[in-house]
Amino acid sequence: MNSLALWMPPEEDFHRWRELTNNDFTLAEYKEQIDALAKSAEDMGYQVVVVRWTVERMREALQAREFDNTTENRAVLISEAGADQEINNDEC
Image (cartoon, rainbow, N blue to C red; front, side):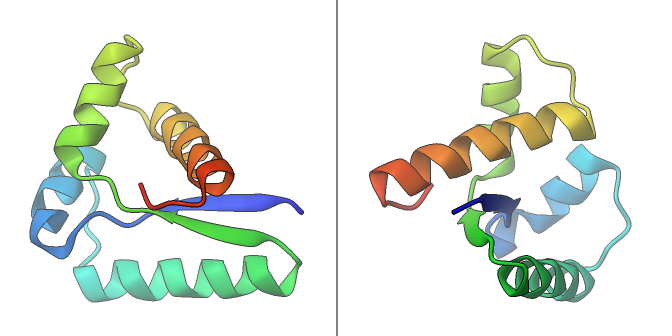
């Protein structure tokens, strides 16, 4: 089964997520978008894995890989974390 990893930071860290991603979403808007994307992916047969990293954890992962803070690089890290979570059947 194919899987899709989605990043949902802790609510108390959301303001940091907005700064890191340079995004204007409110928490409610982001949750709505994530929920809609997850439902759509599940309807297409994907297993959805929610990665609950803090922004600090993301920053550390970017730095460890010497990645710039870009959407694409964050997506790589979330995808890898989701795959690890799926394999280990635990939460990130």
